[in-house]
Image 1 (cartoon, rainbow, N blue to C red):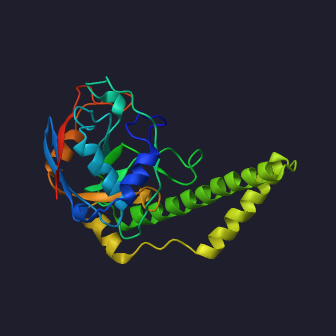
Image 2: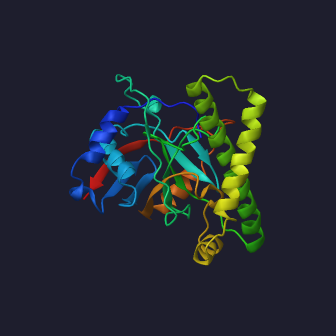
Length: 265
């Protein structure tokens, strides 16, 4: 995911949103009107911070005019970068949202998820405040899924290692005790190994395998990014956007924009 993004609200504003009465937001849907057609999505009540944040951005018009700035066929289409707005009069501030990764929400075809910075600089896996992607994905067979499970295990080890590194460096700084980087890294390896042993091997549920083998998706992202919704109608539009010509940075050669996002409660 992109390592920089220009945003509209502050984290304090997001926490205020989350603390407000959200009864009227439960079961919300959003109609994303684009230059290529309409996409209707549902917003999950299992991820209230992301749901309420998306609703707030839509209702304030933040998404009006932003482009799909990263498009990869058979993978996903990404949008929400405030710097791509046609109206750049407002200079947004950067902010993130705490991860709400829920095992019941996964990266099947049509999943809507939050973009974020990588584990090396973002070990808590906090989401971008505004950028999100819609999964196009591909269909997997048993051999593909076996390889994907190994990839998920590797990514989990790297995540636990990066998190341990961050925690140990913070502890050393707070204690004021000189500790060599080599020692910190060795201890991080041990901590990551212990965490893997405690968690046990990753097991993909059979029903999820069946979804990936029939409808498709991007299973290697499971457990690493917050999925907060899914497409109800308009996957043909997602496919059309995913199939557009792109440059070497995966940016569409011809701008594809969100015209308006309408919240349906």
